[in-house]
Image (cartoon, rainbow, N blue to C red; front, top):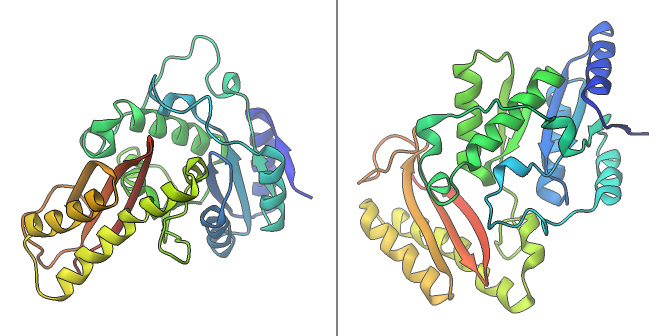
Length: 282
């Protein structure tokens, strides 16, 4: 039976009991409305520690004023059942006042990695992400934390925060999970009509076309971006950005070289902002 904690005090008590038993902990932070991508994170977490815990919290500080906080999909009871089926021992599902009590005013910002890509389009987004993740790390004190590579910039921001603040936690990136037709799994896919879902396939098809071009010998990133942008346009998607970057620094690159590079896309489909990414270089 999964334990449900609503307060930080309950989480700390849970962690003390684990420590007394000499057990290690892996944490999977989520905003809920779970899909197979989330479930893969729980499975990875259980491989890496004695106990897996999760959070379920739609974090208000990472949403902008015109974004979808109020209508973000929620299914708390269904999420608890899925977590229990995957062997999650405890889920922390607090109210916003528990995470951001009256008078709190501290924020965490990873400056350079947060000022580009999604950070440019969503000012303050990664400040909200870094702040809530650090709060969760301080409560749970996990040995391991697992995040999906679908939110690749988020993964890099959290890794940098953990290094810079000397956090004693291993940050694990788990592979992006796709549906059979290539669409990256996302809670926001639930907003899409059947027709719009077909249009959304333009993101994964753009990535595939760029990867195919690389396999054929193209290494000029301007040419690769042009290929990807054309496919987004053909699918009726409104491009937010299409970038080819160094995987570690997220700095744009002009040509593919010896280091690992990744293509990242954000695009709007019928008013829904979707993201996707894939490695391009070695």
